[in-house]
Each structure stands twice: as C-alpha cells, then as structure tokens.
Image 1 (tube, rainbow, N blue to C red):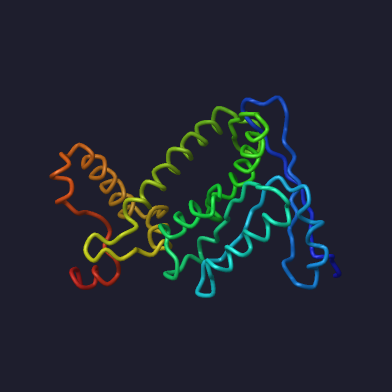
Image 2 (cartoon, rainbow, N blue to C red):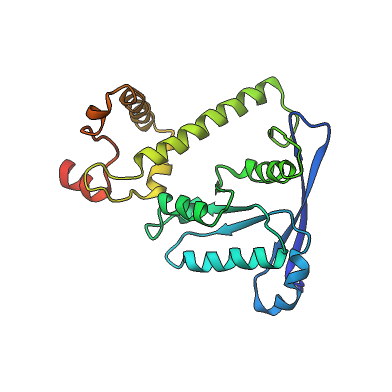
Length: 236
C-alpha cells in the first residue's frame, strides 16, 4: 500500500452543556524523512497535537523535545499539545515525576495513559480547543449520558483523581527515597485482587488521616510503598 505519509480519520465529541457536536479531523503523520517535503502541509491549520510515545529503554526526552519544537514550528502557532503514553512501556529510565516536570517545563497541556484513559483523550483536546475560542464545555463519554452512564462517569472522575493522588503520594520509596516503577504502581492501583483492593483502601485511609496531623508530627512520619530492593531487604 502506498501513502503520502499521512492517514486521515475523524471522530465526534459530545459535551454536556453544548448544543452542537464537535467533529475532530485526525491526521496521523508519518515522521519519515521520505515525506519531509510534505510535512508543512500536514501541520498547516492544526488546532492541537497528540504525541504518542513509548517510554522504553530507547526513549529520550531530548528527542521528544525536538519533536515538540518541530510541531510548533511547522504549525506556525502555539497549539495545545498532549502526550499519550503507552502505560505498558513505562520503564525505570523515566518516572512519573520526571514526566510531569518535563510537561510543565515545555508548557504542554497534560498527558494520558493508554489504554485506561483512551475514552477521554479527544474530549479533553476538544475542550481545550473550544476554550481558546471562548467556549466553555463539560465533556462526557462519546454518546448521550443515561442515568447509569452519568453515575459511571462520576465514578471515573472520582477514581481518576484518586489515581493521580496515589501516584503523587506513593511514587517514592519511603525507605531509600528512590522512585518506584510506574507500571507496578499502576498494576497495583487497578488490581481486582481482593487483597490488593483491601491494602489500597487502607493506604488511602492512612493518607487521609495523615492530613490531620500537626505539621511537626507529619514530617517525622514516613509511610508508603517500598521499592523492590527495600521490600526484599526488610520483608524476605
């Protein structure tokens, strides 16, 4: 099959407080040098960008920065950029905290993990694009919400906020201070195992209770999830 380095798809987004549907045209661009002469045409008129990345051993923040600069230069304007991360590829070479710092430094919008957050990527992109044009919308799933769907959506938002809070609080080992592997934390948080769910519930209970401690007491108490090395050292 022959292509010109770009595949075009469309997707529709529905919003709670809007009397219209937003149709997004997606241009899946081939970064190959073979089509470099056409790339400016592909970026022209873009309202936003989604960069899909694998955080494996070969991943480089410097290379990602170059891609971001190229997108901004070829689009000819400052557009919202989101990172889409393959959560199965999260490796010790880069951790959650490093990624969030990079996003802030490079003035990116945010990032999503696949597959858990796939339903909300385009909705958030559309929301940002509309906001820049003075239109405030609330997003939902890509179909009108029934009462059952609304409850599911509310549950998702609550769980997602817990998920971010969980990563921020437990991404470091409380013993040695090294970063915990994201893929282990992710697997633990979304585990359906009864024992894991029980431990997670207890962790959040202790986390909530710690907020009530006096500041001078809080800094003398360390709790969290130990890294692999510390776990083996103290519990094996």
